[in-house]
Amino acid sequence: MDLPGGRFRALEWAGAGPGVLFLHGLTGVAEAWQETVDALGEDRPRCVAIDQRGHGGSEHGGPYHVRQLVRDALAAARAAGLERPHLVGHSMGARVAMAAAAWHPSAWRSVVMADIGPEAWAANWRETVTSVDAMPETLTRDEAVAFFTRNRPTPPERVHGYLQRMRDAGEGTLTWRGSREAWKAMVRQHRGRDYWAQWDALGEPPAMLVHGLRSNELRPNVAEAMRRRNPRVRYIAFDGVGHNIPLLAPVPLAETLREFWGAIRV
Image 1 (cartoon, rainbow, N blue to C red):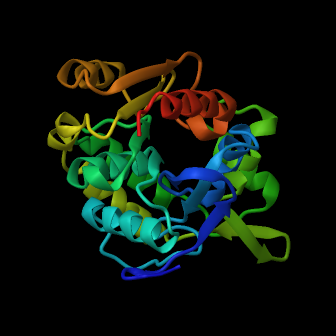
Image 2: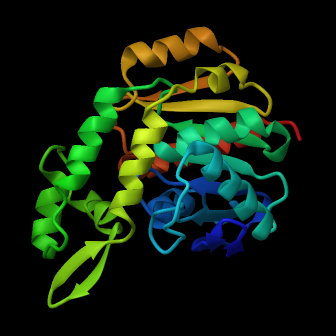
């Protein structure tokens, strides 16, 4: 896609209905949504997922603040011919979706935010920047698997979801699909301020928060504050699931999306 903000890579899955735009999380790529889309079934709506700015095959230049990523999402929906689509985001993509729905409510049929809070969190962005700096430039496949699973229990059948973030670098090695400098800039900027005002504004279009109860990103006290401050947003919790819901629970996520969309009166 040639958008006002640069050239962007997208994946599209055929379907009917109003359409869906998917936004992945930090360091992710559009393929993060493959299994969720598959689980939506053959009668799914038309689905489009983009590599967000700084990720995968999309524009790697800034600015990287949330408002720019919202502009990218709006432009991608228009370029894909999605007329007032459902919007679904995970992690960083969920924060972008939150702001997009608050600032441009008429552009979306609904918004679903998977496992992110609206709070500023300095310790989180500092830890993430340190982790990105520690990423080796190239790794073998075995080294990459060890790197991705070093701090998180991951079933072997789920490891491929992390490897999607890498590409062949030759001589049996892999390297990152995206800009590590962009990722650091994004997490500093996005987690450096809060989005409570945007959270409080949600309600129309219909909005839903999906929480992995084993997540280390959406903390229980923050989730409770979100529910208390804005009861208009539907809350769904996945017991035993960590932060990366599209990777760890794509089938339950797809079932939840179908049920949520089906209840919306057009």
